[in-house]
Image 1 (tube, one colour):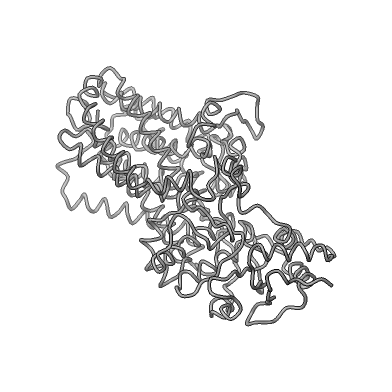
Image 2 (tube, helix red, strand yellow):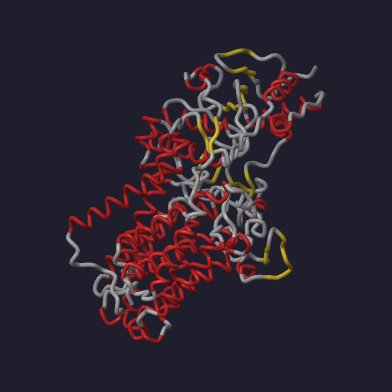
Length: 623
């Protein structure tokens, strides 16, 4: 079977092209790589035009969080800090980074760039390379295992990287845009059966799993599930059953080695994730809400050519989670393509195709979540994911993201049917022309538009010039107003920029991260939440910023603020000239200033910010 073995008996149409001149092979590789890089730059061009002052308008919070992690990478190397736990956020409790998406490999590898150019540049660089690298690695995978033509492999690879689901995740997610992880891991899984190489192959797989865990743990989990479904389905097929049986012991030994290597390297991160300080159970998101609407598979995404003509859909929970959105033309094309490729395949090849299609079908159904949803209405129809939702790992996953596995399956089918066309195996001229036209008609509506961006508040000179150090003790607590959260993330990213420059560092209360519902043992047993459990004072400023709400404060409010500031150990708060909101939202800076002045008295003007000094346990004083 061509996707698992090179044995000629297993496939009548081996994909390799051993006689291709090396120069022509490298020209094809270079062409696909340049096309992928050009497409990735096109998608992210809004950030590249001004990475310091532009931000993804559909996901300001995640952008700030990943920039923070990149800055923390420099801080980790310079201070010997724990890459899986930090006390710089959410004082006085800290944040379990292992239970979040720590991207530790990225933060270390890109630390020189982060130090020299800032987290802003590292962020857009990784985002761009993720998209381009995904297309290129999928191209290499498809050409190695399934098709001969660089055109077929290139088309499948470009689709797998720039499908609507991954363009959607390009709105902020450095973990989910790392689509190159899946083909690399699957490639190594398919090599486990090589005779006499179980030790080496198992060792390589174990190292890959350990490294990729910090980049895309949830995606790695999905890839492992998909690999298991595929291998089991393929092994049960009659034409290859003997072949699978012969390879069983070799694969089992290799998997054992991989488990030992990955387990040893991930022992501490896994301990921190499940049992470390500030750990929690499950996820901070509602799995029934973050389930894919069945109609979304037939809809067009919000960032596509179809959307320019008013055909986009809003069935997703937000613009970062439009994970399927293939549209009717592509879904129909995939069904027709599966039939055409199946009818022309040799028995061994059919075993591969069956396993691919079963994998796609399983993940499509699982992506629908625990209840059936159609056109934004939940029906009282339980689905298979309901039986998995409370199992370990599944309880921390978002079901709709399982549709990203279907993206890979569709990319494979697209490559296979394109190879059929190029080989002339579709003999009827009208059918051949119809399939070619259908490919264009299916892909054109979902051709991506660049991710949306907006201006964001520049880093204040007060922070950039280090003036803040005159008002905060070493490792003291300083916060911008409003306090950092996913929708008001300025303070967190400015902390990131100070970490990236090295030198003294301040800590902040709150922040955007996933943490427990409460800081006691009960919180460890409950599902997580976004940010810290809110106190009255941070809600006071968040409410003013988000809604312009101003209330007359009493001494009871000042007493509460005094207790909250003492709890955090805050030594100073500051208000910059502008504050950033998500999705071009205008935040009410004046309301924040009025609230702060009423609470704390007149501010000092320091550089380009308004500053209030706080004596913990003393300020604000009663009036």
